Length: 199
Image (cartoon, rainbow, N blue to C red; front, side, top):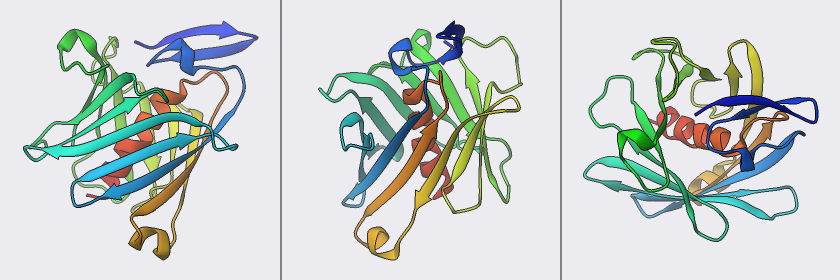
């Protein structure tokens, strides 16, 4: 549920929770580590190397599933790819739930065929119908992207690609989240973007 309030003069955009919103810019590093053919782990760190979030993922019945946890391992949300959809739709639920009343938001490609990866984000609480609440726009296969709320830029991601890290199964993303924006929400979008952009 998105809520917009003001803290210290900064508009707050909370989707996952207020605890992930701060009234100053947040810079994070997302480290992606492949585990075998079907496993993936993400660690979200600050510039000092402190663990903020961790995401584990796997395939189950040909469906991708990713679970975000806090540093202590407590479940925050679960991302699931909806199988056999033209626009590669993902559902994001609170905690470990898959119930409709715990749905936070959905993410899907803007168009089935597109040269640039562009994702539409629809909040479960939205009454906008077919109009997305957020958009993720990135260059084809670069895995660098920007997140917009309407025309307002709220986060930027730069993918640090090297052949050595790719072959080693390790990748790194540098994430800048603008003041007041829910960084757990943005991290979720980056992970889904990464999954869709590589398909």
